[in-house]
Length: 373
Length: 173
Image 1 (cartoon, rainbow over the protein chains, first blue to last red):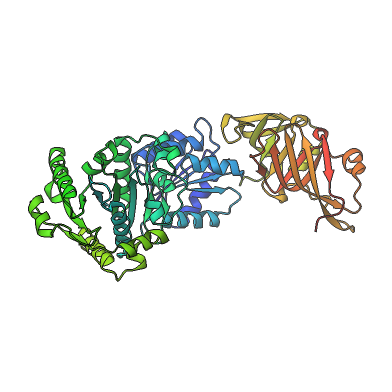
Image 2 (image 1 turned 30 degrees about the horizontal axis):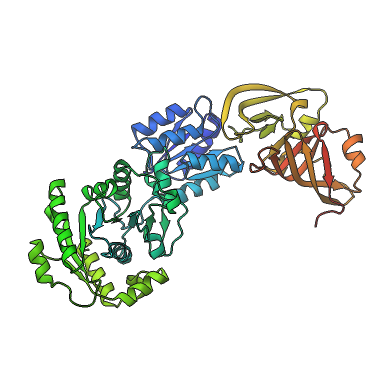
């Protein structure tokens, strides 16, 4: 039975809300004080919390904040139900972590329908398994290997599979091209998130992500280089662990250096796609990378080497590359520069705009390796 | 805060420096009737939550019982129009709405004034016996923080606090 926690200092309102929700088939737990409500929520997290704003000692804003700060209750949908009707109250409640703001001018029926709506929004769609997801980081120590292009196309290819929630995390300061390649206009980024003194939860991350029509949710690194700020490995780790619990696949686009952010992503990944191009320097960089992975304790099975044929002729053969790496190449991305540039310029990944091309097919094949179902 | 209890009205009371969200016991009368009742100078409030004007959503104090001096109130915002007096809403004269703009200490208020019959500002502001006038669809903004707005169904404005009263020449459509 769906459990709802109602926190309201007014016993009359509390009884009425309890009656309406019980009649609608919910199990209702009540509390008349903010502290009492928090205690009950931490002991046994409810499916949804309805919080009054105007309560003595601890007001509803603070209750929302504390629910969001606690790991056990950070993801609970919160509805603020208050007699305060002003826009500034709504804004403050949403900033404190509420998902919904309803004034007490609403009838009990309206309250119940809002509760249903909020529960439906927060629950995963039937048949969608959202936890635990897989983190896949794409990396190349040699720049210009097409890591971002593959990351974007891979994410959209995975999102085309049934019931797959896909997040795309941009960790590349030097290009930061992911939003451009998907033609999305984010208003917030990881840099802004890192500056906030807030506990990272899925609902917090959702505010910083931008949705692409394919279903991929993008978390950009930075909006403009004028806003660049350092991001700690701890922040990256927190973001990844939260995304892992909210998405089936988390695709991470990294820079071509082993900086703190990249190292954090690599060491927390379930799979690492090592991208190389068929030329000697790239292969040499891949060998060095594999040595680095070994010293970082990355599992051999987690590494998926792939070759991106970024030029038409005179590249090293697959056999030569495999011999040099002493491991098989799992995928070969064909050379289709005109189509790729066209896709980048139009802001629509090749897997969506030209799904029948050899490159899109190869990326879909790679996606099926990551997501066999 | 109880909005379901009979005889109680939840409202935002504004002085020139504070926002006071509270429940007033109207004893089944309208709040306007209570405010215009010259036999009492104070309004009894329950479950009172006080916020400073520059941070109107932050609750700085809360008390279960409070008394508010009526002449200290600049205006009161109510969620719906039902909660004000209806004694001027009947009659044989046409009811018309005029756009109004008024300034009171620390605030500017825009809204619609309902006028029954001929508009006579002297009657409305000077000769009329009511201390508080009713304005519908109000938008009140603190003069120093114009980005913050307070809206509702009705606002009851203390006439003695009005500094500037502007009204459209003809009724609004």
